[in-house]
Image (tube, rainbow, N blue to C red; front, side, top):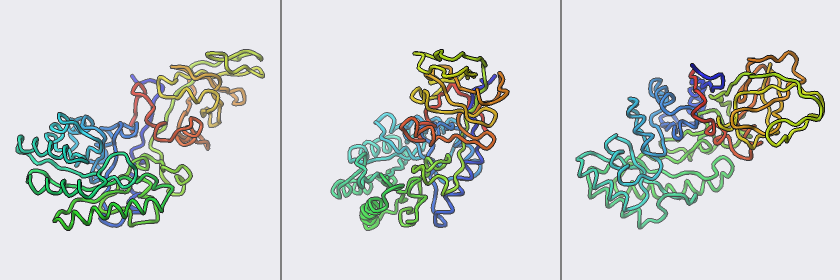
Length: 371
């Protein structure tokens, strides 16, 4: 039996968003669907299975080896790249599960070579280049040359990919172009050494740009896969479809007299007789406490302000001006109802964060229903 508080995941919206990305890519450019962190809160396995069944993506991107093991155990056979660092035991497991590894130093590649030799099994490697984000990646030609020598020395090491990550692709085209130029220098060095790795650099901001030279052989579609642009101001421009909506139902209706406080700390004091709807959702479900007294929900197609402090399991909303609200009425926390819509970008602005965190914050105790 599912809770009344649940999210709905519209898988056709994800398909639409991939189509929107392909419209901006050259024919033949591959798409890596980034499904790390439970597919940005949408569900790692169901989303990945849908992508594979529908033939929507050529590759999946994850952050940690455990996510890849989960995919393989669920029967997903698409190529998978572990984009984060992997320690030795996880590296061995990745090779066993046919997961491609990200490497950004000589020592890690040597460890991968040792495991590949020991297991007599090919290890697929993507080399990460740091072109200015200063997170992970190779910066200097000397280290890169040593990496190339290691590939030549171990035939079980497969140089499958070369990539970088744009730090400001949604907002700074000049810096992004400079990153792309630095990346191309490493790509040329690899080619001159006789290697032909798959080149990828563009994230969602790089996909939805007017600079096609940033896209290379493959683009990595992350937040835009789920219906949001990294720059909220551009989401509507590219007609992306949010895949996730969040729903609950009214648990109780009561009228609170003028001058009484509501919730922990009595932070909201009624300025009039107020009809209050209590909703069975709170920060334990991922509805952020910092939204207290700031956000709104949708009831009967109209906006209702959240009153007082968000509790672990409940919030209260002012429905005084919404006639006829009753117990068990449908409530939308995130998504559309009637002509009104609340987006992850709206909640993110109120919480001083980004849409990514809003989507990922919805906890595992909120059931995901796939449409």
